[in-house]
Image 1 (cartoon, helix red, strand yellow):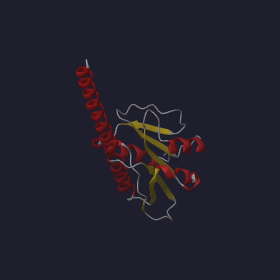
Image 2 (image 1 turned 30 degrees about the vertical axis):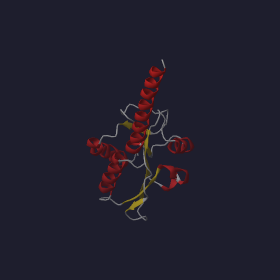
Image 3 (image 1 turned 180 degrees about the vertical axis):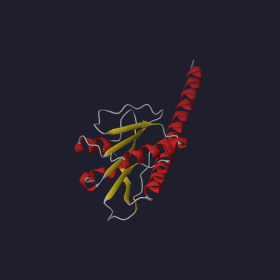
Image 4 (image 1 turned 90 degrees about the vertical axis):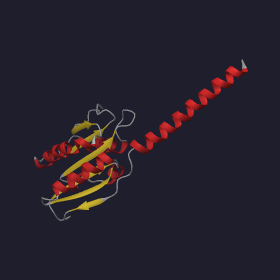
Length: 170
């Protein structure tokens, strides 16, 4: 009987170790990182777009492609981490783009608090990534898109965001 408990204990220890290793790998690979502040264009331009994001390969690619596309126009672009939304004054921006990650079926708390503070507006677009792209955001009263973080789909997402900005709706 002791031998059975020893084997069972060893088996459970191996399963626990594998779970810890998998969890660490998942966090390192998929958990959003802090986004570095960047600026593009002239701050004196009348068209001003702030992009609040989290760092990930997908979001970084979307932000870079969007900045490249917008840079061909007289637009000032500021990129900041989504945690800095607490300090964003909505009236200072023509459009606000928020890229955040849904974790445990919840959008980023900074993004959610900002949207609750601002209320209904047509100058904000929220892009929320989730594992399968099937996250259902709560009633935000702003334009929103949910998607999976597929690098092959970054250009399509950039086109959608660009159209919102060009149409006067974020």
